[in-house]
Length: 259
Picture 1 (tube, rainbow, N blue to C red):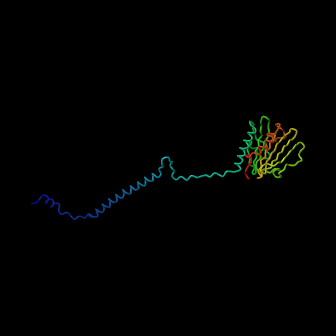
Picture 2: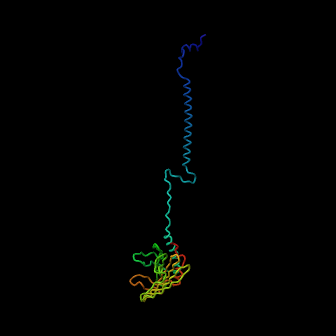
């Protein structure tokens, strides 16, 4: 008996042999699957690296973000302090303290220069001359006006070179008295009193020169050496008595330790 299936098969006929390589097709399909799997793995790895890089550059809590490509911070090294400048500052502070105690309520002004070409320094402020420091001021209080000058260091005066009083003769209108005595630890002390002219311009000069060659001198007067008639008294006595000047010149704070 002939069935419908048989009739259909006769109409279709015998199919031609297949030209498709089934094994090759299966192999390509497997390679495609592996490539897709590999691509997913590479994407995951790249994403992991990107996230890690972001985490590296994200600052922690409380930290400031660093600028990418910024140059390293330069550390500046301050210059070494100048010992003579520091010593001038120290001496100035010591002198101002001593003078303010000696002349409470007084006013201070710049003193005339002692050498041509110099500029007046601020009152009681030490100036460095290379081998010694000096300071001066015009002092005015209820008793009148006078001048104080201080020198610290190795300035060469006749006393420091000869270790004795200056020799005369002196002008007729000058009364001069000098005395050199021994101090502590091999120091020498010179005390000079002078009285000049009919106005009785008076000066007390005291200098101590220590065994190491460093010295301190104080010069106080009862006027201001300036103008055409410089030796005019503006008070009865110098700013300090001889005893007071001797005490001040030996103050440890006014002694320099610089070579």
